[in-house]
View 1 (cartoon, one colour):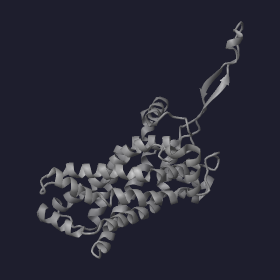
View 2 (cartoon, helix red, strand yellow; view 1 turned 60 degrees about the horizontal axis):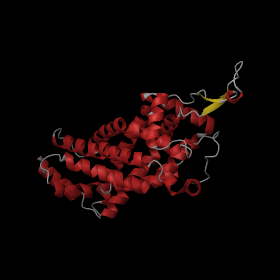
View 3 (cartoon, rainbow, N blue to C red; view 1 turned 135 degrees about the vertical axis):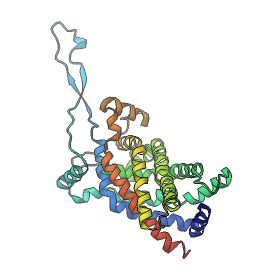
Length: 331
């Protein structure tokens, strides 16, 4: 089958209105989020591990020390207690110490995020891709990599600016432990109100800049990578357009997203979860984290992040492709 013929068939398959595309993408993403949410909670806990507070101690005065220099407090890093070790260990520890339901803390905000975020970044992807295709006029017989990348960056960045408050609330819920103080909310609605009251509108969009960068990159890695890999499997491997093809493309997309997005994701999580005034900005958070914990800190939670993104992509893409077969043909 030629690429042009297959592309034409794919286009006729996607003849659905924009609202239908948005709803279909959001539904598939919510289902994937529900299935993989415990992995996301484990990832967040591992990413924030290492943020020990700095305590001060009074230095004992030396003999003949001037009075003005006596008992000056000196900052000393608190001893870091490693509570979570690995994906399975983290999930086991959370379940044992805080109960199984804790793994789903922030699920409501997570589903709200997917309805806002994924419906835009995925639901509008084909529409935006067609728009850029008409502008760039890339060879329709090719893979149109430039068009796809621009569409992925655009929809990924735009989605964040709308869904950012839901992401902040989700991270706060997932990061909160039973022993934490002053950062627990009874509901997502209370969380929105409290953050707005204590931190203002900027608090709800805290970390928006690194999140725009992170999700634009993830969008390219996930959607564009899936789109290209799926087309290559259909064209060069002569694989039928079924679950096997969707599963294979989703695994590759999940791996690519994990590799490129982990550093930005760790900084985003740390910054969103930080108390007001702890960091001057996302860049300051990244610099201090690297200086204190080393380069490896940027890949904290890599295994659960990989497990979560791959499983999330598999569930989401298979669900989305199956929903398209049912919904798009009826719209």
